[in-house]
Image (cartoon, rainbow, N blue to C red; front, side, top):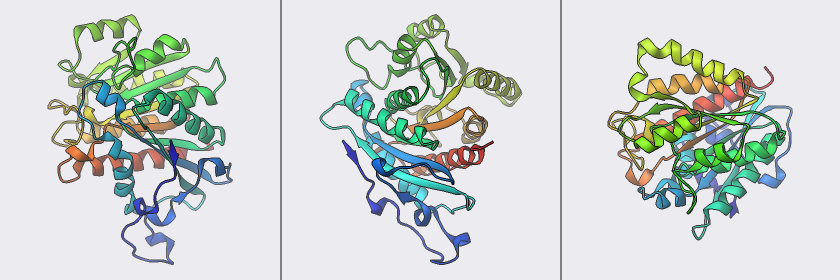
Length: 321
């Protein structure tokens, strides 16, 4: 089901009602129904929520990420508006998964993402469980020529390459894509050695997945990772970036379905996010597995909102370059 975002999600501190240099996001972000979205002379980015954690439930995880999209909006609302006069952010609403109809919800999310991208508007999807990614992908594929090469970069502790013959879940999306789309490739950074079975490593190798272990991502390895990501992005027509918040150390992001004791530092994730969203082939980003029901003092929501802000800033700055 498609719904408009409630205005109450975009409320916050007001320092001025006239001086735009004192404005915050809730004073500038406009809610626009998806059928009313049109191309603009301004550099534009659209937010869309995926209110769903059916995939997490199917994957036997801890549910609650369906509350992530609106929590992230509330986290963004009072952040300062630092964008340029020729830039705008719109909120095109939510896809809500009803009655466990995950596949239908993913298709509907894909339709919204495709509509946005076809208007030359960058897209940021607020998940939701990581099953959000498959709907995001469907929209990207629909918006592109059939032969276009899609490079998917996943910042994640897990491969999400489980079998989907019984039903898809939050652990199957990348296998679905790679087995169904010969023009898609997959690069995942932050893989936990203790968070994936040997079978999943074998499947990753079989599907030619590029991956970097969490414990490899040291300062000494940074340039090598930067070069590898750059090479991967340069050889694809479109880059789709997805971030699963469980890649972070649980001390920084406790509000996720599967916390990672050996997870990444926020500055490491931010560095990757900056590089990928600044690339001219990157036009969309999703953030998943923010679970406010499991969050402590709102830390995961706040960190997630900052990551979204970083992505918006880079996607908008890169338009027209």
